[in-house]
Image (tube, rainbow, N blue to C red; front, side):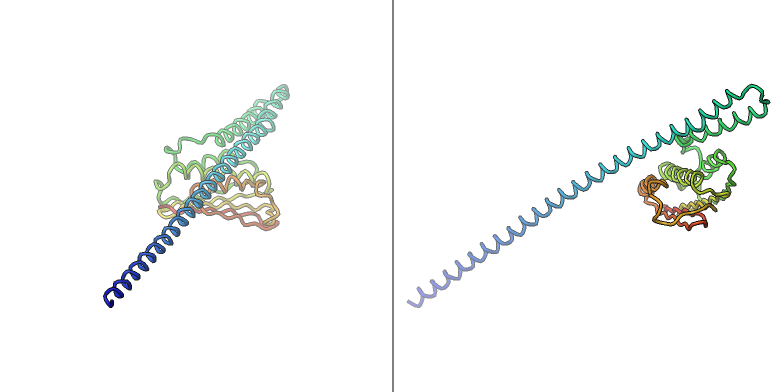
Length: 251
């Protein structure tokens, strides 16, 4: 009798153990299934977020392209075509020296536009020389001071070089159009560790937050700075000019 009773107790504990094992297995399986479901949901959310970012990036890119086309069309109409028409209408009765100066200015504007569209072969020219060549073409009645310092000329790849050049063009273009400045100062530093650009003007400045970002080309600058993982900052005060700084650490 005692043996049969003990056998019954053992069987009971065996069944309890089996039941607990089944419950634990079911619980662990449920946790795993919930985890897998959670991971799948996060993947779907991540995919949707990536798709949304891609769509926004493409829309921003198209918007920038359209804005560049509009700006180019405006420059051609307002500057180049208007200048050439004036030269044609006023050709009679003017001396050759005046005509030469007008044509020279028109050629300068055309070269400036060509730089906005297609810069020279970036693999054949350093960033400091690319900037120098560009600044020679944009000089008007504003004094442009340029201070390059190059310690490591071979540290910059073509994509970074192009993005820095385009950002400089945007900043200079804004200064020429909106700052009413008499002096623009550009400092460029290329070292083993970083690439640094500073553009300052003595113009009318602005109160931060009162100027629309798109109005000062911030959208283009933001996209290009993000593409090369660079940091930038605008600082300005009314009647105290504007300063733009961008820096990229080099690997």
